[in-house]
Image (cartoon, rainbow, N blue to C red):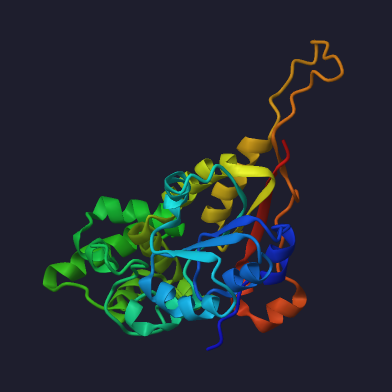
Length: 310
């Protein structure tokens, strides 16, 4: 399947790319965004992060055909600030985060991300880490499973599913995606099973977020990288579900929202508090009709952008 970069044109537009700028793509994937950014910065430098070593290997030849002013970093994007400090880079012109799992990871059955293929429970973006979906499903307590399914999957039937998982693994370990799907289906009422959408979607999302520590990593990265922007620099974040989008929205608002002023106080001209950041658009940017027709994954995508103005 051909890789499709979600909201590609919108990201390139809102990054406001300078040809001599320093940019970071925190989610290299298959270099869809990175390759386009690199073409626009002949006198700049691109740092692209990915904790999936397969992405690093596959993208090296793609980017090398464009230029040599890039660096591929095999680690989680939470290490951005540390990398900048190691290279004595004080500030950057732009950061892009395309969150969640890349399409190639979903389509590689053996990675265990998808409920559409039967494979060993895995879901690790970084294949070298120890924690996988297998450990989560087979070793987490009932209480811990309920909590993560409800918090990360917003699954209404988290208690029933966790209890069925707990019961099934007493007989034998739950080893494959289809075994887990069957357990999930057996936990849900027929009304839910017959409704639109796959019954395992929320559970798989919750386990994947847990395995890859996605939400905590996102918050940490935004908190560290917004202050690392140059004046005029921007951060673009594409999210795919409400939990991610809420973190991005809350973080950006914390940097841009003015403190409430006592209306009884007289504020002289020039004394108003001026935040050093602004929201480039008040509402999230979504895909065009043309993109929605071409790429199903774009339907849930939301792009938010923050800029340093002073």
